[in-house]
Structure formats: C-alpha cells, structure tokens
Image 1 (cartoon, rainbow, N blue to C red):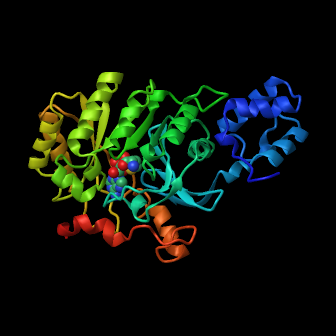
Image 2: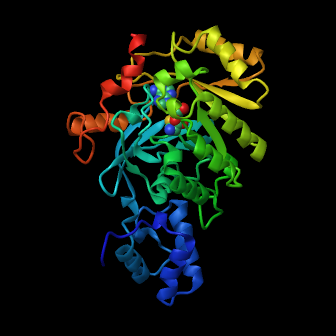
Image 3: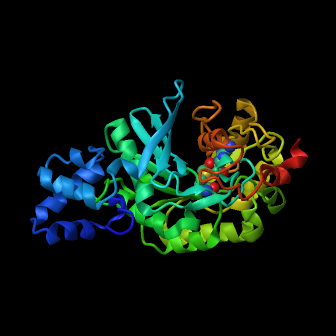
Length: 377
Ligand code: SAH
C-alpha cells in the first residue's frame, strides 16, 4: 500500500462505512467498529471483538495501529490532586501532553492542538521551542479517547488548553470538537457546553467561531487589563490589541448568547494589584462574562511567581465587589512538571539540549521569549 496508513480517528463516519461496503460487509459492521473505536475500549484492532477475526486483520492492515495515533511514553502524577499528565508520542515521534484532572467524581481532559506553540507567551512552557506542526483532528480526538480508556469511562469535560493555539489550527480543532461531541457510535457524546476552546486572543478565530452555530464554550487568555502590560507577556497582543479582542468577545456573546470566560494568570507584582483589578473591571464593565483566575504555575524560564493565596483571593474579591463574576482556580499540582508544556520540554532537554523531537533547533530561544519580562527580575 502506498503512503502511511491513515489514523482511523481522522476518518469521517462515512469513510469507515465505505471500508466495510467495499468489502461487501453489512452496514451494522461499520456501526460496531465505530462504537468500539470511539468508546476507547480497544487499544488495538485485535480488541474489536464484535468483528470477525478476518475483518480485524483487514482493518489492521488498512489503517494505522490504533495505539499509534497517541502512545504514552511518560507520565507525571500528582498524588495530592490525582491529576495525571501523560506525555504522548505521535506517529511521527513528536510529543504532546494531555492532562486528566479529577474533581469529585468528574474528570476533565485537557488536550493539545499543536506540537509546541508559536505564540510565545512569556510564562508558558509550550511556546519555548516554537510550533513544530498542527495536530490532525484525529490526533486531537484520540487524546480524549486515550483518556477515556485510562479513566475507564467517558470524560465529563474536554478543554483545549494543552499545548498549542487552537485557532491557529482552526479546522482540525473544530473537526475534533465536533467528533468528541457527536453522539455514539459516531463520537464520544460529550455535550457541546462541556467542550471549551481556549485562545490567547486570535481575533479572526473568535469571529469565525461565533458563526459556527455550535454551543462550544469560549475561553480567552487575557492575563492583563492594559495593552502596555499585556504586550509584555503576550506577543499576540501586538497583532490583536485588547480593544479589538474584547470587541470580538462582546460580538460573540451578542451573536451566540454564550458567556465568555477570561483566563487571568496571576503573577506577583505584575498584574495582581488593586490598580489592575480596577482596570479589568473598567474594561469589562457592562459585559456579561466571567473571570477565571489562575495563580502562575512556576516555569524555570520565566522570572515570575504566583501571589500568596491571600493576595489571589483579595484580587478575586475585588473583582466580585466590582460586579465581575470571578473564580480562583486552585492550581492542580504545583509540582515541577505541572504547567503547560513542561513535561514535553523536559523530555526534549533529555533528548538533546534545547533540540526539538525531530532534532531541529528551537525556532525561538528561551532568552527571546522571556525578554519582555526582564524588568520583572
Ligand atoms: N493557547 C491557548 C490554550 C493553551 S494554554 C490559550 O492561550 O488560551 C491554557 C491556559 O493556561 C492559558 O490561559 C495559558 O495562558 C495558561 N498558562 C500557560 N502557562 C501557564 C503557567 N505557567 N501558569 C499559569 N497559567 C498558564
């Protein structure tokens, strides 16, 4: 067969149906295969026990190995919170992270949308080596299926908050989200409102997302209430400044009726004073939205730290007093590898100083990434 075998997670339901039709198999076979594929119960084609052995062998010869789309090569577990963070290898050897976060009896799965990230937010380990490539929709969806197998059932929530900027891989992210949302046997059956796409502020992506007619949730990483401050930690702000960003968010809510969540990573002495709280309130006045505060997860390449728990709570309370609905997210595991992109980063360092998985030099140096924050030291 010419070319690499295709991942079954990237197929439309009709493509799998065609595979069976071409072999003269009845339609229910495709349904059985889809059901097993998306339930996550089988880690290999041989595990498709509802199908005859000969068909299983044909599937194995035709499509990529089922555990080859994402294969676990490392694991970080936080005993305190129960958070599990596997390092997953893709078929071409690239690495991505996915995070399984328990809360009571519910599980949230955080998936990556790109290998690395091009955005270069100063505090985020995912962007330290630039972006290697976009993930295919199947590689994104397979992370959630892998997680379903790991936790023994369908996850309750999926958030696009792993490595990568979802709106720089728009079509594949939407295709994956639709697939995770699709009712079994054609998908995982996760409610649209339980699927959140998070962007660092790619305005054209937000505008397109508003017109999809879906009920997916939108999160926007704001992190600072003024352009002067935001541009110091988020290069994307130079392209789409705060005014444009918030206008796109307002238009999203007007069009869809969905409430936008603004992510705000708290960094001591940088964006956590009453002045920033007041500026944030002024910026979002009259806009029905939420703020989600995240104490900074320390990363070695960034010279900032989280404010004390008391200071974080004071910032939250100031927002609430000003009429903004604000939650403070307890950091799920502050241990060394907990923040975005850190597990992959460490593995890359082991493979060869600062080289990416395929042996290339990082596209941007760590020094360049942290330069906007130098004055913090
Ligand atoms: N590119 C997307 C989604 C990935 S990051 C986005 O920017 O929204 C998911 C969230 O984690 C973002 O809000 C991001 O800014 C935040 N984040 C990244 N590194 C962090 C760190 N070290 N501490 C706290 N939050 C971090």
